[in-house]
Length: 149
Length: 250
Image 1 (cartoon, rainbow over the protein chains, first blue to last red):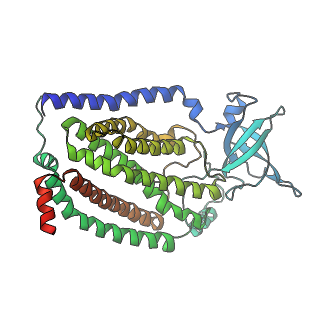
Image 2: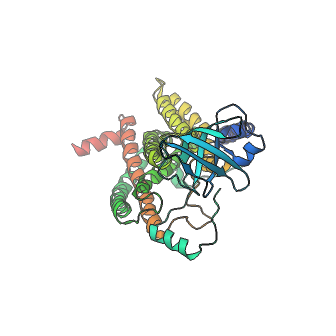
Image 3: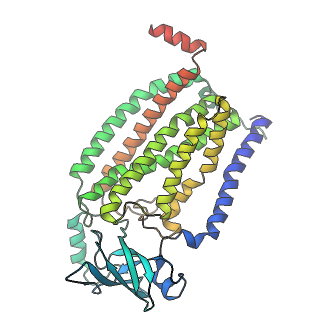
């Protein structure tokens, strides 16, 4: 390589690593703003802004789902296994929504500490399997509860 | 410090040598792409078992994941080519990067569109501004910007240099896309396949997916070489080897 090319190579590498460092620092300082949702522990600890529209993420607590028979109103608790928050929602739920499923709800915390959601999204995890295997897994170890983040 | 690059590196710099070399490889990649994509499509869409939660709607993964992988691989290839083009002032390298850009942009659009179609029934939303989806959208904008820069200058080599610099700057987005699902809370699920862990998917699902990914790579190589050869002919239309080639065909 000629000295001229080495110089240009240094500049090119400088551009790549320079941007990496700048973007890295910017993202580090914006860390909290890039997160899509707050965990229930963060909300209970008061880390989430009050009165603003926020998202809460967690698992639907088993046995907590109450459906109104006359309307689309539902109420359930979300948990990250440490803390839990009650969520009220009126509307259509996604297909994957069920007890034990990871979900993300968008809305506001009211004065009673109940989360008034206007949108509920189901979070899918990275695991895929055929139905037969899922059944056999369920039958094989009925006592161990799988905990998903 | 004196570093000597291998001989083939300088051979690649010759438009004629590159044109001929790609001409030899082209039919092999075309055949491989046709076979792999054909097998992968039928295997994935018909024979692979349904998912226990999503049923059949998960099958869009056989398009979505290869497109997303290729969108990022294409960008990395463009960054390497642009870097070589900038450092060694190698015209062929710039032409490779230029030819790859529209393919990468298309792959990004396919990944975003299939993701939205899958997201509506599964998550309940077409689009969510989470880190993975947003960084992927930025990748699309980068591609569009790079494509625009190539033709934004009346002097072709100025456009190539500007586009090459944007490609190098944009490279920082690739690790962000990859690790967005680990660094932040996102709606998008983390990777099903990692180098260190067993895939979170049975072989009868990931084997057709692997076939599709390989097929996509072959298809990409085929498209890239075909486009590069065309661009080489266009750019070298006054040189003796292109004129000789045309006389030969007539």
